[in-house]
Image (cartoon, rainbow, N blue to C red):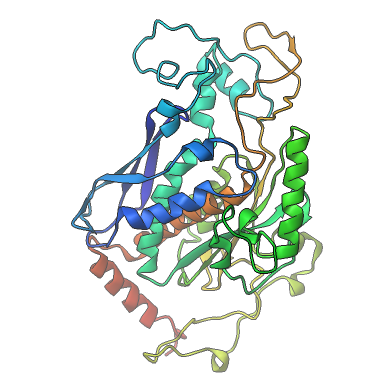
Length: 416
């Protein structure tokens, strides 16, 4: 079982993540994880926090001489903002977020933010200061998720599984559908150079340069209005074998697990697979993915089937009956506009329930949809790593690979 737990607050000392279930013998380095950590930080519309942080996941346990040992992997991500940033009183957050009781007096946050975890969290946990809720509910926690997802990505690479994410919509600007995305182009540093045609495609992680330029305009307009914008991300995983997951129980279906993982991301309010909600308007004959006959199957270099039971279409998004079909896995998520607004909405006071003209504002992004594409990759990778280990097991990576190869060799027609 691949699983992870995170701990830490947005303005505390840092974030901790513990990853469990990784087989021994997997090559893993901090440098590998650093690439995904850096990808999470960039994107047009991000706020000042990303100018402070230099996210790095330090491996504290579970790896020796560059190889996993089979034991839990612990990682530490320092919050530079804790010691170098400016808290609400104009000084670093050291006293504000002190573990020990502090003699310094702080003004509690009581102007509740609609759309955030403030109100239900404060009510549930009996808090008089919404900071005790917002510190943990902050999207800052996603840095730990991306570190865990990077470990999952490294594991999946051993089996030829790739996971990529991109943006299809920001602020009502929709990208044209594309079936041949240049993933390398999306990794170009958004603040340091432009594409040859003058577009800033990488800035919003969108594969459509024209739409990317208009997305940037939508973000700029929201910034000028003191508002925020949401959007849609798409995560595509290729190389996953047919049969991951199961139809046997509701909670073991891969659709269940993927939907839960992606919905757990901050601000995500809807998830769809493949053609998604559009299928509701179509007849079944236009929806279901017809299986190609065996004469149209492709052989791998070793004589086996390159991709057994291939389909003519992929409206299901690579999932049927809670299991992978062998086609690309396609997951889409709707990310609502960020709830912390420069021009805060009217609200009420946590202590009195009385009307307040403007909800609390500290510091926020205008949008973090491009970042959500990277976080979405991490969550999908974590679920796929868990499903691979569930199917193929193995306490050492070589054992897992042997089990996978044996399974793949027997995936042809069952009467052979």
